[in-house]
Image (cartoon, rainbow, N blue to C red; front, top):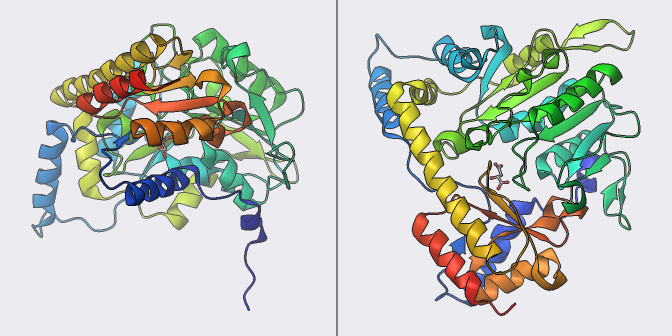
Length: 411
Ligand code: MLT
């Protein structure tokens, strides 16, 4: 019999969002009349912006004509999209990038899961706790995590950086040697952010301690406040130490259409076993050209349309829609005396469960009494215990209904 990758047996339970979906399905089977409102997984509900739709249609027509038909495209993405990304997401903010530093992909989940492959298996990784589960699980699969300790509910070789109300959800610097640090801002799940000065502390730390920051910025479009950086490269020296992940999923409604990108600056170096310097960008390029055939031409054409004047306006409207939902949830829930975080620069609201309830206990109560699906904070890590996440990505009607139902809960 073939042997499996034993590391997979170290994974704990099922993937968080699959577990939630399973419980939701079971509840619906038992209560077919329940009108469930889903504010669990951060999946968007508004349609694609009109500029994107038009561009997608045009691209489909191009594929129907032998003269404009496209087969395999560049694995890194088409220049027409990369140039728009650089111009609008970076150059407009004073950050210069070359085309070969941007890699278009089919999603940040894949990118943040795959990036660890190009680093040594003995790299020590640090993650925020609570954390988007993909960072941890992809390293477990690779064999970097060590054993799972059932007492601490943590992997032995992973360094966890607690983020809780005491530190205002801002992690302390690691106290032991780490090689790769995953940072997510605006944060999923807490919805909190770092200021430019606070992010600079991490960049300076990484430069001083020779580590690499894996900066997940999938929710960048939701930043409202002025002192919150949009890109880690706004910080001096960050190109030497950071990889940045961005996504169109939450920015432009691409969760089903799939398009994201990664920036791997040419300045970013790591070392091989002999201590020689290696350009990380070359390795990621090698990885992508081997394992990935690029995002479809049609999708990239649709993606490029978000940078048109019309596209930008339509995206601003989308963001505004979801951020109004966030405000409705924040205000509605805090009016009940419940502690609420996030929802100001991010589409996630992180709340302290009432009466010291455990996260899953509160999940079950909310589902059975209010027919609302949310995400238990503990699913993101030990520091999420006693917290609960709601997304602002529902429809306005469902968001308002959910807040009303919340207010009627017996707490
Ligand atoms: C979430 O709910 O945390 C996200 O939607 C998951 C994802 O983007 O993969």
